[in-house]
Image 1 (cartoon, chains in turn orange, brown):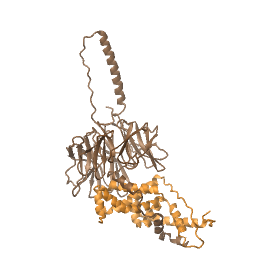
Image 2 (cartoon, each protein chain N blue to C red):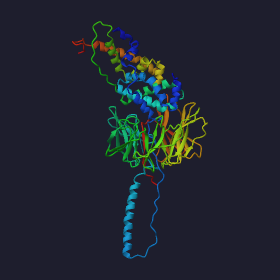
Image 3 (cartoon, chains in turn brown, yellow):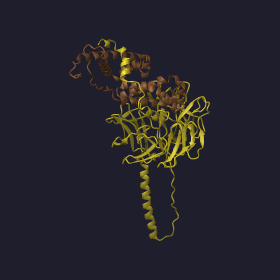
Image 4 (cartoon, rainbow over the protein chains, first blue to last red):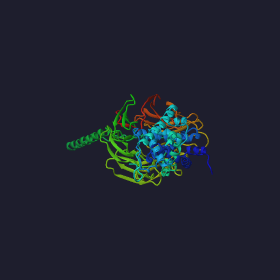
Length: 189
Length: 425
């Protein structure tokens, strides 16, 4: 039996844990993945998702429009991500660069290497900027929705989006210019 | 690598590749935690209050002098002097500390700050002063009933640990790890122990009595989840909530884990427990079981089961939640939620339901957010935080209970606690 989401929200608002569990199962995978992308740490992502979902349960009775549940839940999780970033003193979360196989010269299909470069560039972004990128490109949220979710002006969201792309391009270009030649064994020196 | 010229076209696939969307392995644990959590924000510990049943002691001395031999008289006089001295010394020691329950004088107000410190906050001026600024992030201060010390949580390296400090911020020392799940700690009336949940690998049915100084633990398994256990004034008992679907409601149990029984509250109990100062009554909220808004505030006598609805008629169009007894035991502060428009307002209601609500403080639109407050030990002030559902940013007020006037402050505490001091009169 497919249960309407609005009905699930209304049941959860009346204290029905099973209804909340069904709602949570519908959204947790994507939000956990998004939190991992933003925070780049599965443990921190878990903390943010748990904080968001438990906060949703606690505050659910006061949500006026059940149809807004998904957007509201996203906001809670991403606000938890931002809170974690702030608690960490705005320090960039370090990314461990793993050893990778170097691409063969001229191999444009070196998907793995491209991914590593993009990943590294994404990791170097300020976490608040990365949140904009993840919400826009991973969750497909329009920038006005991103702005509303993060509680920032739309101009700020656009600015972060634009500057993030610029920084990523610069970062990748720098990486490419300094990438050493492959050494024996296929690892960077 | 010309593909990087338009990296935005590759980002969706890249991100999907980097972080596969799957139900995380902590999902069931998270649901378990949620199921043990009451439906309201948990940033603040509720006011712990306070009994008014201070038993008067009457003198048994009589003025009629018996005709006794001088030696006996001298002996009696000497004994009276000794007894008097002991009683005087004892009374002086008692005067140095407030009773564990009952009205008390306002002392220092501690808050956890956005910077991760424990700070004092002056509600008159709005000034804050850092008291503890440790290596990690400190939050959630909670004063002992005697006002002599407080516990707080330090988060460092992703690990949460409970610490205790003297009231002036000195002598900070570790108490132990913060429990998992619906972790909770509350001082015993003796101010030397805590009642804690979540320590036994987060097992929600286990309640632990933890000696703050020695670290000694006594645990008992109640067989049902125990949420927010709190000491009952005048009884060596704990009262707690349970939010499992089958057992939801409030319970009372002896402090050694025996004598568990359910308090026969009305159907649809949803709220935190809120005990009257003398420990005889419990205030709680219910969900309506019909259509339309009908959440009401009840007060039930824990032992007799006599239950009274103290909010207006169920058709008043509002939702009433989160009752808290004021320290004098005569009134209750509760939250009134407006379903059409999403606003909250606080109201003071006679605890016996003998009068209408009197509204205090500002009304705020906080759809999807919440409102929490803590009562000052003397019952004259509330520290209130409204959390807007759109931004989740809190707004803080100090509200005068008598006049209803509110003063807005810029602080956004992560936990706060008011020190209790002995009454001077």
